[in-house]
Amino acid sequence: METHQTIALPHVDDSNVMSDTENSKTRVLQLLDQVESVVEKLRRDALKMEEDRDSVFTTLDTIRNSDMLTELSDSKYHIYQLSSSDSLPYLFHYSFVKTIQEISKLGTYLIRWMRLLVRL
Image 1 (cartoon, rainbow, N blue to C red):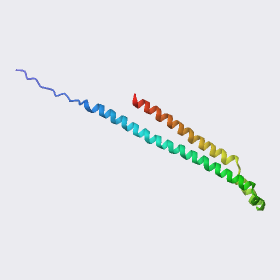
Image 2: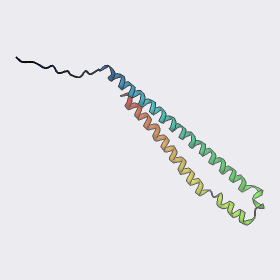
Image 3: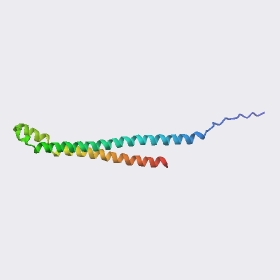
């Protein structure tokens, strides 16, 4: 007499697969929204830094052209000239702001690209 053993196959519930996929997409979109907000904050900060830089250079030009400059002693004048050199701080700040702007643009493109991929 032969006895057959019944093998229990695992039960796969397909109803959760769609919801997991939707949850994953929703989570990715939420993360992309967070990244986008950080990128936008970087962009705003870069613009603020540019405005601050322009304000500082305007102030330096005003001081440079003022009559108060003639009252400074020679040593103070040389220190002032070194501290208000246009080229070095401007180049450093300009390259820093441009780098932040490029990162911001790349972040925006990355977010758009990722959103397109998530929607596919």
